[in-house]
Length: 256
Image (cartoon, rainbow, N blue to C red; front, side, top):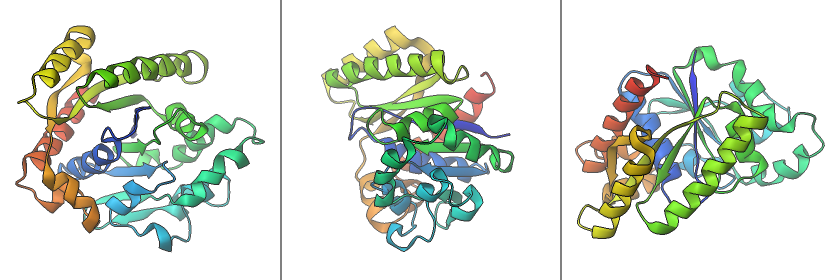
């Protein structure tokens, strides 16, 4: 049975999609069966996986409004070695359409139940806001992976996200928990980043993943080629870090 994880942070530009794509590819490289669900109308996780968001017959939008199943919308990332439920700009209209749906916050959860036995990991790339789409992701998930930069504004956003997760846990999904905080775009030469990193460990202890994702040009280049950074340049520091993170995730779920 798959472990379902949201990659979420209410702050934009913190590497959520980069983490979703490369964790999926890193886990696939470790022979795990992975499904990546793109819940962001921008469709960046779709394009970064090598799937053209402009040429979709079905997407997560059709799944959420009940026009098709997960299997009907599923594509394969040939370069990454994992399956993708793609997204495009149609998804932006889903929130308005879902308002009249009964139990609208749990539609994704119900859809994923039909395929969770086919995978080891299901990763959900959430948009950078606590919207109805993000709420669907949180209600479907066993836990949340929070990518964050080691900056002080990021700490403020983190407290808001943790409060949101607590509310969803209390009211909608009692299984939901923070799996861990992932330090991304990390530059060890910066004293401020070192200080914030130390503060995170002091406050959250073993909730902070041991793996640190460095700031890496090759990871930033990869999406323009529609290839995960883990595949684009396997020898880069960023690629090695995400494969290491995949291995850490496999170990961590054994203790959940």
